[in-house]
Amino acid sequence: MDTSTIFKAGFGVVGAFISWIVGGLGLAFTILLGLMLLDYVTGLMAGYIRKELSSRKGITGLVRKTYIIILVGCVYMIEISVLKSNGVIGDGVVIAYSVIEFLSIVENGAKLGVPLGPLANVISAVKGKGGESK
Image (cartoon, rainbow, N blue to C red; front, side):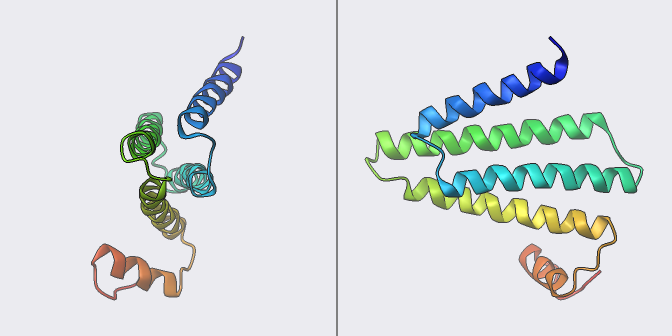
């Protein structure tokens, strides 16, 4: 079995386990996973263009994203089992991480030299850098 097949199977097993833990992948969580994938791909693109592509950085990014998925799963489990809630807190955590992923995607676009227009001001304001644009 080649590495690619093992990698895909591993993600499938992890995804199925998370789905089982949280009772199915909700829309917010599915969007977060999509944004994580897009952030990773745009990060690879930016690293390639800037000649900073590093397998160590890539693996570190995947490890961090995996931790976020584990953390979100834990929040959902605690909320549903202990707090007897319907997942609203977990969805809030997922939305917060989704915003972070979106900001990272936009920053990767800036690293690629894509003109960001008004998004540059939004990113600067969110990050607390004032109104400066790139």
